[in-house]
Amino acid sequence: MSNTSPVLLILGSGPNVGQKVSQAFAAKGYKIALASRRIKEVDSTANQVNISSDLSDPDSVIRVFQKVQALLGPPSVVVYNAGAATPSDEKNPLSLPLTAFTRDLNINTISAFVAAQQAVLGFEQLPESASKTFIYTGNILNTTIMVPLMDLGIGKSATAHMIQYAALSYKDQGYKSVFPALILPRMKLTRYRFYYADERKADGSAAYFDIDGDAHGKLYIRLAEGKSQEPWLQTFVKGVGYKHFSTS
Image (cartoon, rainbow, N blue to C red; front, side):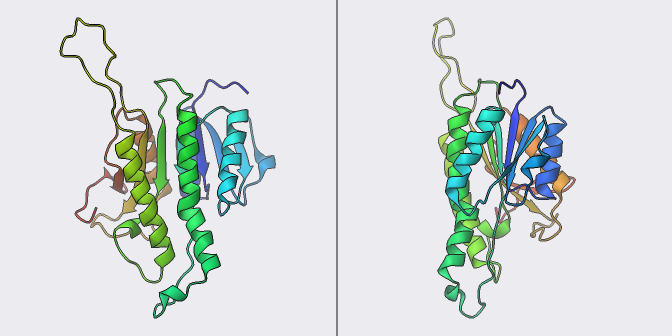
């Protein structure tokens, strides 16, 4: 299906962040694709495609992108919003069952890696003017330990490293000639942008259960509309936006 509108894909489209982010982008004229385990595909509309997908299976991510490509075209903004945690024993955290650890790591990291791979493949098909932005909804666990969330912290830390690596690797490329009269390749803008988003309270502490979906929507729109790679670690505060904290 041909589509002239930009496309947003959210993997892990829950009722808070996922819903508010999709609404923010829809208001900007984006077609929306939502993927989650419980979503109802029959509720799809002309402007929103719902895809049932279990992100504990990394191969399902490829199928999601294939369906989005077929129905809407390659997404110019991809948001990975899924997360999973199995509380570990506070006295013996390494007793966590391997099946639970593997499932959660798949959701928190492996499927996010596949999503980033697929996003880049799609970005390569888009015009230079497209956003080409990948955003991972994270939390404070890439910088701190929170008992009993060992496996969630492992997943967030690993994915934060991937995002940092990708942000560095895909940032500004090209050069400007010191001889403007010469016909040389012009300076390229950032090809692709990668972000790890972490909502905090004003004092820098974790937002915990006070996560604000609208604040995520505002930040994600700003990042998607940016022209260059900003700090890959986007710690932010509701009503303020991006804010650097010493722990970050």
